[in-house]
Length: 308
View 1: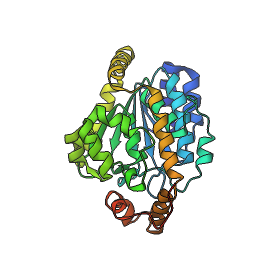
View 2 (view 1 turned 60 degrees about the horizontal axis):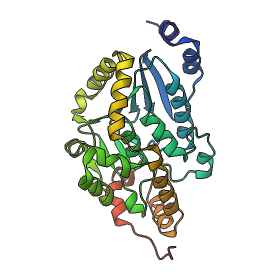
View 3 (view 1 turned 90 degrees about the horizontal axis):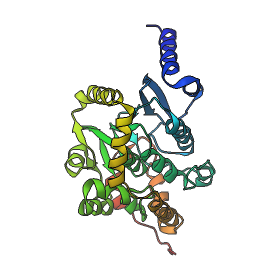
View 4 (view 1 turned 120 degrees about the vertical axis):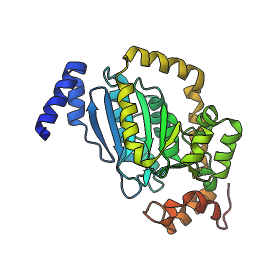
């Protein structure tokens, strides 16, 4: 099938299932830090692609908000796979060089801070959200997968962690509120207080991810599982999500205070000193530091600062 024929087929499928609004969104949506692919009218795929290491910055937040707005009202999409075009980095972490004022100036339908707005809305989407984790997902990247419904990890290539404690901060996107339902109280403390990296094997054992799949089988597994789920009756999916969320999700208002605590920490000299030292050593570049950040952050301490 030619590219033009495939495009006509996609448009016909969307038109028959969801009207012209969905066609217009897919054709007009031009995200800069990820790509959106319509595998079928019921199954969409999002592939993060923000070199060099897939940090989460203002442009990505902006485009995620636009995508969420579409998915909140879309009556056809039953499943969304979130994956990465970079096999080494799923989502490295928050962009620590970005201007937070620019990010917070983006529209927020919930009224919450920018990242909390994204994650709360993500956790309530009518479609099933699937994280296909191949590569590193630390900090805000880990918080993103925790806000999705299902997490599958490449056994050989997935690394997860919440390293914020090494920055003298609490995770700002709700990891302390979402992890306990998945891994329990003790293991939540272990993950959050160690700041270390967790392999896919250990993450599966803890319940941090649903399962770890050999990398050679990973893509085929994700394709088959997501396609299967996307074909179920939409009303049944909605009922299942409603009741599971009812018994496992915290109230939305529990998350903004965690964001406030993070940003309060980020303004302190100790955080800024560690951040500065990490950038001096190669933070947010494709080098040894980013690959081993879970360990490296534990070896860096604030320079002589007077912390408020």
